[in-house]
Amino acid sequence: MLTILHTADLHLGHVSGQLEPEAARKLARARLTVVETILGLADQYDVRAVLCAGDLFDTPSPDPDWWRGLLASFTKRTAWSRPVLLLPGNHDPLIRDSVYDRAHPFRRGLPPWVHVVDRDNFELALGADAVVYSSPCRSTAGADDLALALPRRADGDERIRIGLVHGSTFDLPDYQTNFPISREAPERCGLDYLAVGDTHGFREIPEGAVAPIVYPSAPEPINFKESDTGQVAIVTFRRRGLPPRIRKERVARWTWRDENVDTLAGLRKLASEDLTTTVLRVHVDMTVSMSEKEEVDALLESLRGTLAAHGRAGALVADCKNLREVSVEALDLDGAPETIREVAQALQARAVSCDKARRALVILHRLLKQVR
Image (cartoon, rainbow, N blue to C red; front, side, top):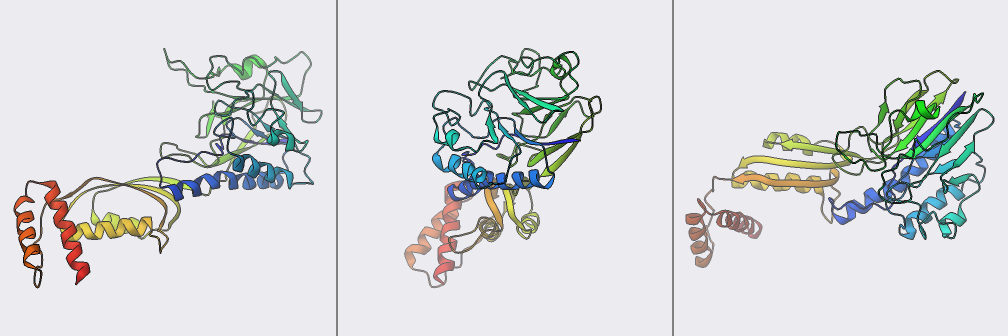
């Protein structure tokens, strides 16, 4: 039997603009750390080869920290011999002076068992019974079907034939797909498996096919829109003509979670959960009093963390545009200076119809509480 590990879309160097800077850096580092997990799985399953189907890097010229970190993961494996194939995708295309250029220090430092797909007719035998055919992206956008350009099966060729390309199988009417991939490519090219990258969720097209097109998903999610992510595909071929066995193995450390909260009790429950490896976006949609608003702020702070304490969530995006205060409580002005009393009375008179006055009352309430 032949087993391979299929991954794609690591996007090393991607730093999320949705998160606070420190959280964004933490998530970016996780995309490099997951490489160790992936290579460890390759050892565990004793795979014949590791195929990375494009967008290994987020740009064709990533900062040195990213390619040096990946290079270190490869070079420290001195006893390895199984091939690892790196396919340039549309985010990190094969262009002059890119990280895949033969003169680039990343490319020059790779061990001999790491192969860069640097030509359109790339072919690599996996022993006598299997072969990989591949073609790289040479730009960030294109209209050519790289899968249909792979060589056809010759008469008498009984090997397991694996295609490796980057692109999209979406075929909506009147929609121009970037690097389109025909769903007929496996049959027309005589492939037993088409390993693809681009879509970040796991997809098998069609499910259970003798020769499927498979997206393994991004090993670490990148945003809240993605679903069924954080995995690699372990693919086992028994013999030609039988569907391969595809096992999804989770490798991600992080989970991205979107939550709508419309009650204070719901926010309390969320803040009590263990969310240390969760990127949490919480949409707060409720009406609260001034004292309840203070509790909402405290709960969100417990999720986010402070300079002195870690947050309960690994990273937090708080959407509070639908958090409303309508009942303004009377301030405790005992012992307050006359000027403060006059300001408070003026704000209370305007707070019924003025958002700025209500917010100012909240601030004044907190200041008085802190002073006492």
